Length: 316
Length: 226
Image 1: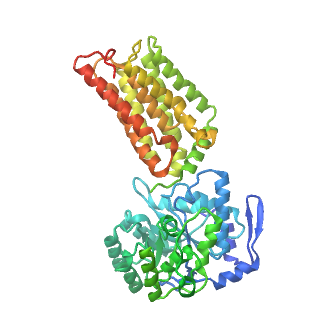
Image 2 (image 1 turned 45 degrees about the horizontal axis):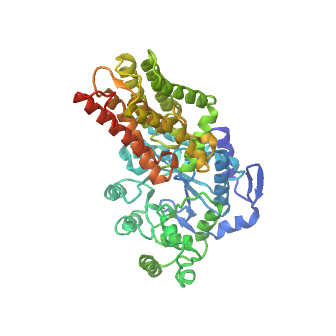
Image 3 (image 1 turned 180 degrees about the vertical axis):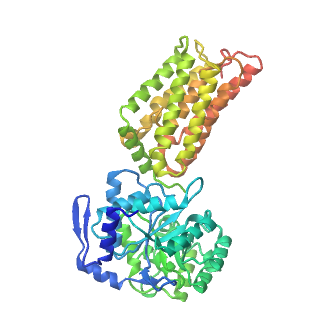
């Protein structure tokens, strides 16, 4: 069912952007045309299924957007989302498993006057006695959307049943792309089977400069099968940032990897892999979002530099 | 590992306490009343205490676990089912079968139980403002699961089993499980309010077992002080 808000949001998305006027916590922040130009300059990767190009840095919502009804925290998250979109961000990824995150994302989107560029991604997750279609309808209501750009089967739970529904939803226009997810390196064997046998557009898995198991089989398979790849846990939540923050970047980081700080170093390693479509770091802070989005600019490391980056981190 | 932060947990508890005012005050008064009834028993104290405790477990399940906590944690309803089960056990063993009574006088078990109950009523709630949290986010027994569990174990230590010897121990199993689960979560997430729960729960449960075994061997729980 399409709500009035959904209609308004859909209209705004379709209207394009001549500039962003963001109403946040009663204040209005005009982001002007410079950011619109930046949007054109940012790094985008193609979704193999269609060739559509999306920003290579997205945004996760695990923990960070699960703030319940807290009004101050919701305003703060709206600021984070506003900065994400203003910097040219696209994919926002959530799940019904993430507590109030979907409701908070929807609330934050409502606070923004323009959500142009949003690539909405969520999941279906039915551990017990939950109807997948009902849950997806509830997700659309919470986000205030009449359809999602991407619907994924969360952690492969009941994937056989859900993929059938998702294929039908895709055919009937309730979702544009479909996929499956894992995290923490779990169930890669089953994921590989799905990637080989099912018509999916996206796969989401854990990949970062330390957790690189996906390089062996899954990333080459994704490239071979034309499946877009989303990397979750790009910082192992925040463990990698905390581990490396006080340590120096290599002196070749900016020249060879295009990285001016650790977030850019870690994110560019990920999106520098040719099979990677998008990495989805999560944050609660606007300044960290700005650092994350810095990875959308400048050169990406090639294979040789990526190997050097991994070796440098391993030696720390 | 957990889908929320300690700040969000306290904020959600504060919103729950505020939205349901004056229930937090009522719950505190009722739970304090149950401690006073256990300390200075009158005829029918056991039934009254059982009724108050069962109401506290039901409200913690329905009001908190199925309510705002489920909003930030998908596991909330699962915990809620266990809390309802505990309320059912209390209703069955205490109110229906009348297995638990509260003797007059003082012994070591009753002294420790009373202190555990006081910790649940006053000590645990005081932690929130002491660590700089919102006063509205205080964990109140009968509203929040941690102090409700500890209060229950404390009151059970003050009780006497009328017919069998293990009713109090069985009634403490779910409170203990909650203390352990919440304690692990607290240490992993740094939630000061719940960090002591494993020690309080395990300590109280161990004393209940010691007490039951002594009674089983023919000792008198009134005399068998720890």
